[in-house]
Length: 351
Ligand code: NCD
Ligand code: ZN
Figure 1 (cartoon, helix red, strand yellow):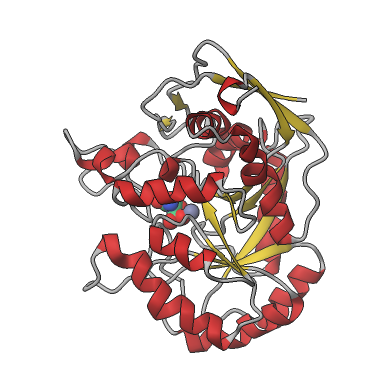
Figure 2: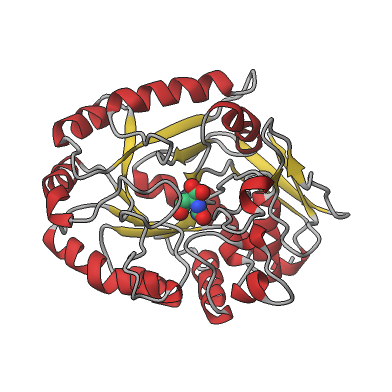
């Protein structure tokens, strides 16, 4: 059977290595969307106020567990939001006690709720050194925030101006460059033999910047980092389907209500939790690379984090187009589900 003729695929249950769940009503609305197909997820700490301390991470994890559907086996893997005041001992204790899996670095002002992020990297060096010592990964939002750098260049400039110097100063630090969007990032990860991996989102494998801007502005395709030219999207697909262990899925599913997105200054974020596995199967199928989907969604991530793959499996089956809800209701308005712009033929069953 050639790859093109595959109509059924059973793989280890996937994990999401970058997810926004928010809190309160939004958390309760979106969590079941992820818990339906995914075994675990790295939970982003950019709440208001952010999840900075071990104590806050425990409280947030408790709220997530309380919001889980009954019988769900989903496990949230918590992160701590790195600030210039972060205490290295608190981070180390959170890691040792299994409270926090990773630390998240937002350059100050880079994206939604990132005002408490880092401006002066020298001020967090002692935290990074401690993390290197204990083998705790740093998840990085890789964009500079300088007003004079074009938004489409912010990731490439970040690699040169921030990431390379940082990795030189703390070479033993395990880094995840998150939601990469450029050929530059793919090349940098490929050229780096140790302590660097990258997550790729569902939407960046599907849209380029034309999808956002041609024929009228499409707020539901606006996210950060913003989608780039087609050549970059193609580079991301090549990385995802390559089987290279340094690339894995982090959806960056980032729910905002329609009222928050559809306004003069709309929020950044694509909500892909609901239909990600069907979207990915479609992308890998189109590339003739379905046998590589499991590595990307279910094996490479746990390997980098030093965890076992999930014991459960899911089965993807190709057939008539699958329908997903176009939006998830919340008390503050609907959250629109990512529209890939093509039919989804792959249904998902958890075993
Ligand atoms: C994220 C959010 O809404 O929290 N938005 C996004 O566009 N991805 C923040 C982020 O991860 O950049
Ligand atoms: Zn994110």
